[in-house]
Amino acid sequence: MSKPVRVFIIMGQSNTLEMGKVKGDNEGSLEHAVRKENLYPFMVDGSGNWTKRMDVRNVHTQGSGGPDGRGGVRRNDWLTVSGSKIGIETGIGHQLGNALDEPVLILKSSIGNRSLGWDLLPPGSPRHEVVTTDKKTGKEITLMTPAHKDEVRYPSWTKGEVPAPPSHNWHAGLQYLGDVARAKKVLSELDKHYPGAEKFEIAGFLWWQGDKDRYNAAHSAMYEKNLNQLFKALRKDFNAPKAKMVVATLGQTNKETASGNEKLIIEGMFAFGDSHKGEAAVVYTNPISMGSSSNAHYGGNAKTYMNVGLAMGEAMVKLWKK
Image (cartoon, rainbow, N blue to C red; front, top):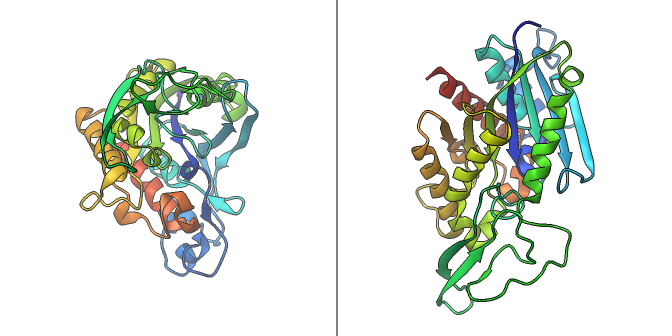
């Protein structure tokens, strides 16, 4: 294989995993969308079988915690539908495979129930002060957010207090370190995960996350700054200074009517995109999401995962064409 493999890394939390239902005659399944609603015609061949792309490799590595945490590769095959669920990688892979002449590797390194402000906090993140309103008293308070590798019990605490020592084997950013290490391990064994490949180039990062941060006022307020640092850290850790980044918003969040923490997060996402024109893009998923909300995995609605994946893939293609 003469051309280097173009690698696109998916990160985030549980909605980056395979949550869209494949089988079923009811609305919301992939089978219903393709065979009854005539959506996504590229997903089946002339015989009605699921297509398999021999130019797009689909790899998913997953583990809890740091580089030494349990886990490993859970999927390693050509892009197709196999099993009972699909994720955003399906739409992403089709868009990138269609647009690029080079072979494509979609590499997902993520797990569920992780926040950017704590578990996935990137290297280089300092402690921050965040002014917010106490829900119980209605009074203004100042919260502290952790720095990367801070070993504290809680992901935020009141300014002036001594943060409680950890009662767990965890620190700020531990999941980030683990997800990056597991992705690097896949790339260190490139031929095992893309047969015949000898070289690769990290071309982009695709991020769909924010659900857990919306339960913490300080993390929500810090979302833009943490995204900026995440992009910087990923480029550095993967030695990919020109890699692009696509961020998808939470599906239930309407940018016109959002309030509270969800408003802070979506505004932080769009502010991040505005400050990285040509290098990053934000996909507004509210009009293309259905089923339910992010914390319920959109009810397993396959159209949400197809639509978001296709939109993220299209956004990445546009970034590289600029």
